[in-house]
Each structure stands twice: as C-alpha cells, then as structure tokens.
Length: 252
Ligand code: PGA
Image (cartoon, rainbow, N blue to C red; front, side, top):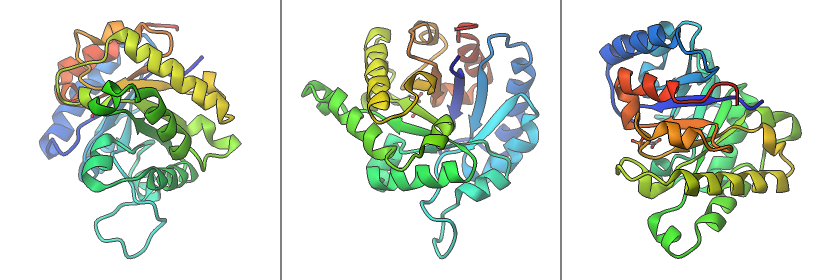
C-alpha cells in the first residue's frame, strides 16, 4: 500500500507564534485521524526547529528547499544534512516558485534530490506545467521531462525516499484547481513515466497540489492515483488543514 501524505507548505509565511499555536492545534487534532495519513508541516527553514519541537510523534516536518551542495561557502543556503539535524524527515524540491523566481533547473533539482535522499530524507519533487504549456497541449510532455530529469540521479535503493507532487502552475494560489479527472489523468501519466525510468511506480506516493481546500480535497483524494496533497494557503489555518487531512480515504 502506498503512503498517504498531506503536507502543508507555508511558503514565506508564518511566525514563531504560528509555529507554536498552529502546530499544537494540528497535533492535537491529528490524534483523532484514523485514515493512516501522514501529516507533514513545511515551514520556513528558520522555524523548522520550533515546529519540530512542537510536532510530537504525530506530525512530520520538512524544509521548502535545500542547496545542491553538501556544505561550504554558499551564503544563505541550508543543506539536507542540516534539515535532518533539525528534526526534518522531508524536503521539497523543484517547487514552481523555486523554478520560476529562483531559476531552479531540472539539473539543479536532480542534484538536490541526490543530496536529500543521501541525507536520509524524503524528497517531495514538485512538477507541473504552466497554463501556456497546457493550452498548447504540452502538459504531459513537460511534466514527463521534469520527472525524468529531476529523478535522473535516484538509485534503485533510494526510490522509497521519493514522493512526486504534481502542481499545475496555473492552479497554485489562484483558487483554480485541476478537476479531479484531469489531475488523475496526469498522475496516471506520471506513474507510467516512473515505471519507464525503472522506478517501482506503484509504490511511489503522488501528491496533488494547487488550490486544494477543505471543500475540494475529498474529490481529488478519491482518485486512484492521487495519494494525498501538497497544500499552500489552506495549511496556514489549522481547521482547514486538518479537514483536508481528514479527506484522505482510509485504507486505499
Ligand atoms: P496553494 O499552494 O495551495 O496555495 O495553491 C500549493 C503549493 O504551492 O504547494
């Protein structure tokens, strides 16, 4: 059975106070989740220690980015090892905001994935097409290339540390979500690409992200190839986030 995961990406939002109050709130409500979902909080790196200290055993913690190097003169960067040292189990990589605003290429994504898995973390590798690419009928090929290139350095024994998050760029923070059918079709296509590159495709969790809210999560998570979600805006409100976590069907 594939792991079911709901991860909250706070982006550059939050505060020390939120890292205490929201995390305690989510933690106490997570105790009553009975669907086997793994709940991950991904705050800005500076709050990771705070979140990890408040997360208890029920929540996992992640970083939004790591550098593609082990250590050294890279002012402003943090390494996968440091994230693990601070209590993280997960690292996002290749988020569309990193790709678009910070010029992260597929090659950089591949290097970072290598560092993340070598550092003993789960890599949540984000892929997704722009509206222009979708309208030009290129969505599947763009996403397939991101998957192939971004995962180029993963070795056979590291696949269990890989999670892929499909986030259509046009759906992120816009209130527009892919329909459950379109998201499912892309997830099935990603799974096919994974098997073509030699990954154990049926064992890899695929998350959907992009304006997932409490009222659309259940339909998305009901699809057979959608194993959970990567949540931005709605992860900053405990009640909304936990209700998204509850929307994961049990035992599938
Ligand atoms: P959103 O962001 O839920 O606010 O659309 C998702 C993401 O960027 O991971």
